[in-house]
Length: 626
Image 1 (cartoon, one colour):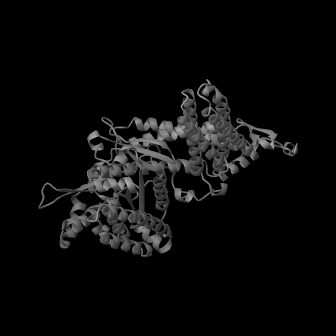
Image 2 (cartoon, rainbow, N blue to C red):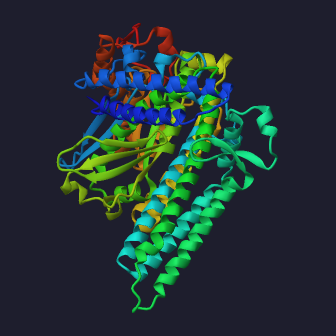
Image 3 (tube, rainbow, N blue to C red):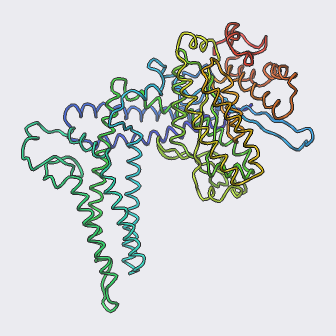
């Protein structure tokens, strides 16, 4: 058992990204001027919230950077505000098995044990993040993530247009006809895409919101029926209707046609006539650039108004609530995922089939939850579930070559995180060519959850365990999709390996049957899903409230099950081996690190409520603060 290397470094990097994003949002809000009183008041409050977040997160980074020698946050500190972004009790549980007949052959099995990603410092009075995300949702079903994605797409399109313009001017300066025509064609396509983008419903809605938010009286609105309020690049002014976004796009298209006609004319000029190609097109290119900039400002302002409207809808609970909570749980979850991915990569780097799987299907990670659906643990489960959904939406890995740096590097935004994993040149040469060239590795993180303690017994009898079923159904669907893609890849690339498919198919079917059943404390869901994941070359993570007691029971059970199924541990010796690992293994050391005593934190009633295979041996537990 060892501490994770990235427990501190991942939160520091992510917080710095969040700070930059908050600063950008502050600048965007400051650009919204001349608003009516209600919108100005809302803008000012939200602006203050974002400014406060910059200050708060900056202080948090300073505190964490002063404690970089630490790699461990104890369970008793899980609600400490100064450590809220740090994963609780994150450790690597490793089992090595030596083969009898092949002493040089070693089998390695890793599980990352980590406190469930949850915002303990914010408490759970209003539930967890999964529940909060179902609160205000207007804007025709849009969300800040969708708006941000559209902003990023717009900025990427602007970059492509700028690149095409530079290529066009460069070819004109050198009088290179083929390159000039090619650059003109690319520019024409990108301008067309920008005009199509302006027709998006989000932008139309944002334009309506922006017009309503501008500071004008009812009398002003009724004046001059042939005029309307539109954006002029800096604010809204009263102009003729033909100045609307449709008219702006129409003018841009006309400029593009004019530019194309000039390019065609230049390419047909007789060789004996000296003409400066650059001068002939530069004036039109300049006008086109100004028009593109005006449309870009219009799009961004429309989207900023949408963000402002969405953020204002959270005013009843405070903007800091959902955004801050999401940042906390996402950071903790990324920390666990990075640890799991790097461990798995190091062990399987030389396995060509696994590397092909990474390249084509992405990285599969099985996240086991032992949280109950009662009391605060319901909120923790809602946080954990939402965090893992965010991992699937926002995170990709890339493998890069580096001589010196061994730490992962995180770039991007909240909605698009790219995590670069450095490899030594000798190891980098082993990976598939497409990964060497920068192909991103998607992630498929599946959460299977089943409460096993006395609180789950209460929830099963008097409360609501429905969220467990919903999460497991969602995860089963995601797992089956991955399994089908894996099966197809295996069949395509190796007929010998594909003979394992029938056994794997039976396991998947057994898991589906258990997921669809409503049996209480059905731990077969956890056991089977972990087994299927390992068969699919996936990584493993296990969580409970603090990754100390229930997680210890789970991970030791898994290790003994592996010994029995993969390494011929006799069934008659199974219980003895399990009790020995629990009473003399590393998990009691982990308990001591957290609470100061080499005991699991259970009382007699709690032990009796646990499923039989998850109960600690006599003498290994007592009532403790956990």
